[in-house]
Image 1 (cartoon, rainbow, N blue to C red):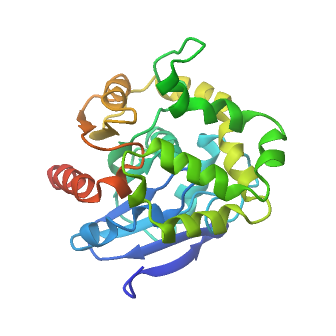
Image 2: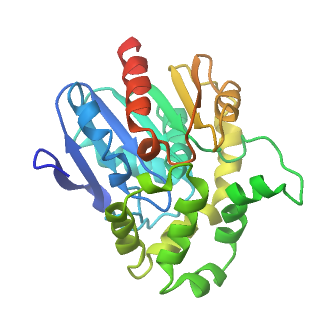
Length: 282
């Protein structure tokens, strides 16, 4: 991070990295990453906007949630945390689990959300149904949904072996794993090796059924703000845009070529360019 970026702790112990000036853009990372997942696009966005990259509760340097890890509660916690720092409407962006949170946030509290962007994710309860056994490529992308949800076993198998799991995910789910740099990986391993941190991450997956039930109710009211949905060619691809078209009236986006799941790190210039063009129009 450059000296122009500030690290702050907000209400509920929520950690943010912020910099730039102008209309706010709020960035939510997924698991097993932190706010630093957006570091390659920080300077590209902050030339024009005030950027807030947030560690969701229990991830990165943010305090654990005391109210559960379903996305309705998590989005409420984050909205409350930001209200003391941002008093104007903002653009909301989420990747992976961060996209789960961003959808619930925009659906519950649409007032201050100027636009919603979701990056390579499957919104709980709103992805296409699957049949088992999964094809090999689908299993490589989705096995963690079942594994992370199990009680106790994930902690038993990953304690002291956090790097093994994280490196496996980055190496298998990225088309350009080298772009998730050694320094980035060290940062992620440092965060998720702390006591309780892996359990916090698993808790989001253990709450997926609750989040999906909440989303079924939220989806009864279609999102009215503009939505950008971008999936990596080797990730969810066009499926994310198709899914969001059932949840919103004004959906843009599509597929990012030559890219896996970690879109901000694998193709930062393309992601920033598409995001900036979308935000300028909205």
